Length: 131
Image 1: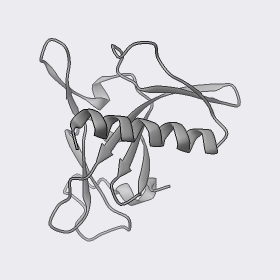
Image 2 (image 1 turned 30 degrees about the horizontal axis):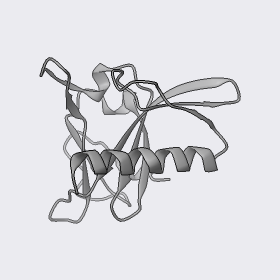
Image 3 (image 1 turned 90 degrees about the horizontal axis):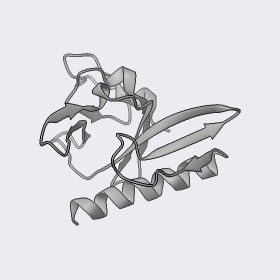
Image 4 (image 1 turned 30 degrees about the vertical axis):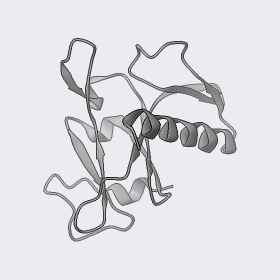
C-alpha cells in the first residue's frame, strides 16, 4: 500500500467517523495547510489531522508518526501546527482521537488499547483516547 493510499484511507475513515458523530465536515480546497479536515458541532470549529498506521512494535501496539516534512523539506511535529485534533486510524480498525496539545513535542506516539505497563517514559497513555 502506498503512502498516498494510506493517507486516503485515514482521511476517508475520519470523514466517516465525524459524519456518524453528527459533525459538519468541511474539506480544504488545497493541501497546503497543516490540517486535513475542519469539523463543526454546536458552533465549535476544530481542525483535524488524519493519520493511518499499520506499523507495530513487537508488543503489537501501533506507532503513529507525528513528524512531517513541509515543501521546503523541513521537519516539524504536529504540535508545531495549529491543529486541534489528531485522528489516528489503525489497520486493525482501532480509532484514536487525541488533542494535539497532548502530543507536545513528540515525533511519534505508541497507541495502546488498554493502559499498559509498557507506557513510554514520557508517560503518554494513549488508551484514554481510544474511541
